[in-house]
Image (cartoon, rainbow, N blue to C red):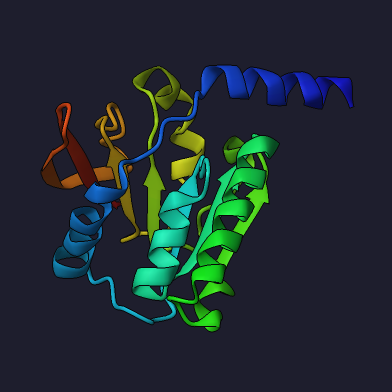
Length: 182
């Protein structure tokens, strides 16, 4: 048990939480819809690797009706995500059935398979990308991997860069990179 706890602690140190600005999500998802076949209220599935406070999965479920899964190792961020969902439910702005499409699990993203997902979202620091190869290999051919802010380097054997979205944020210009799993 101690070994697992140490691994979780080290993962959290190496993968600090940084949130995708909510105002950029509309553009990111619009590109998925226009260029990569995202269909509202379909059976398509999205996973956010390192879901943080759940912003991506909440947005995709409530605004696009996608089955949205989040993998997050930090229990405090999962609690924050669940609180965020409760607050949004109280607003009664979205249909109850959409909230059932949100699933969040405390797990190490390096130990999962991506075979069931159409869209894979990741906000990964370049220093951690060398550990992603075995995880990204599990994605189905044709799955779309969206990398926020940083390109996925050295994945040419398994991913093909298909589109680069240049986003304007208040403080800086940011890119989202769309890859197709080969």
